[in-house]
Length: 171
Picture (cartoon, rainbow, N blue to C red):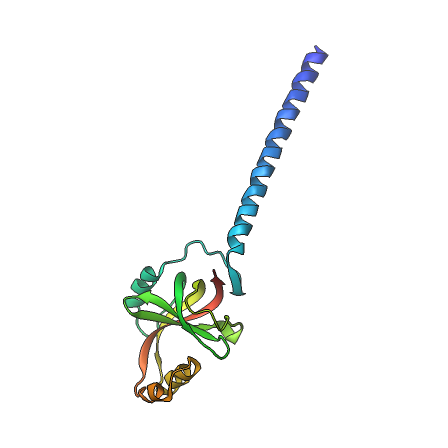
């Protein structure tokens, strides 16, 4: 009788330990896969989880519902149309329909590469609608490398879809 109970006990322990090993292996594989997915991105600023990010069209629809003074915490994915060529301190993200979001970085705390135009990014931060003064528009045009003639054509302020990013993931 003791042998039967001992055999059952040993069998149960082996079954439990094997299932735990299997769970650990699956957990390790999932962790490796997540690390590989994260490795596909360069991180600028604060790290964040890209899950739940809106696409550019969804972000444009969100902006269209906003008015000056509104602020929305959101993350979205897009392509960089242009960026600051002096420091990498801002970028313009494509929203579709010939619209862009002007992105600055929280507390001037990080920068993107100067050659980042055309790269896919995911940004995490706050979206808002704001007015940009003529002086600021001229400054940004100069940073972007526009000619003096193009800069001279800037004569009135613009309302813009703005964004303050706490972090950027770049493919």
